[in-house]
Length: 306
Image (tube, rainbow, N blue to C red; front, side, top):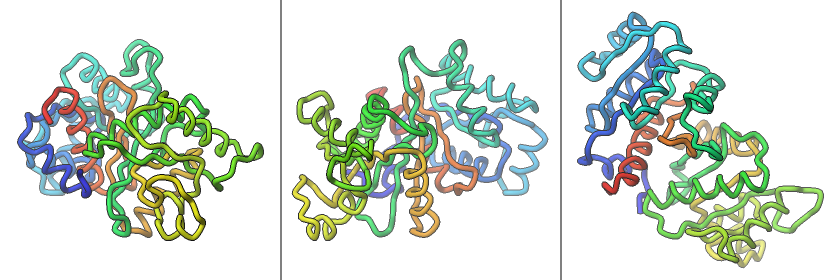
């Protein structure tokens, strides 16, 4: 089981390089991350964007142009469309967001005619968090895409999270549907969803994980809290997967982990035909680098390489 993001990189090293296409790669964190990823042998990089700006930023941060193939397209939306098209047509295996807005990035992926979403597909964001105070990686959803997921969407979110957790070597991950309490209340919809999803898992409708819900975040990640509260669920305090009730709760959790807790992370959009890297503009080059590693791991697994 992979317990550190650095171990994820070691897992991917030595496998065939994956083709990474970066849309509007004009910011230093993205350029430094893709240069490191290519230098580590994880990917072959194609950057699409404003040639002059990319070369200037790369030069200022000591990144040699030999690390990437550069396609000049100064107009951001055209550069983004070109990047999505390359991945859609198999010229790239991973899409990455550079200096382009998240709404534009998501619209390009979602485009029914030229995007990357299969019929009936649902895009969801999965973040893998390595927090110094927690003994293993946490797979968290959804901090960036689904604002207020309904029951059906939470089931799909959980399925994507299980796939990522298993890719990290957790054969039967412990998944928790997070709410404000462990008792079902008609006034708190997330408690109802948590209870229903737990029953679905017990009846075999959700496979690959041990599911508990609804639970407070303290019970999911703290054995001491679970013991004090007398919670008897299997694996209490040892969560591998956290499914949050809405984007506000998930986003606050992940930003608190990174800013106050000193956590590192890797993040991708799941549900598309290829992994799509989506990190915050405030995320470090290290987080972007780890996100490339996670995407490469998922591509390799789908190709039977790991």
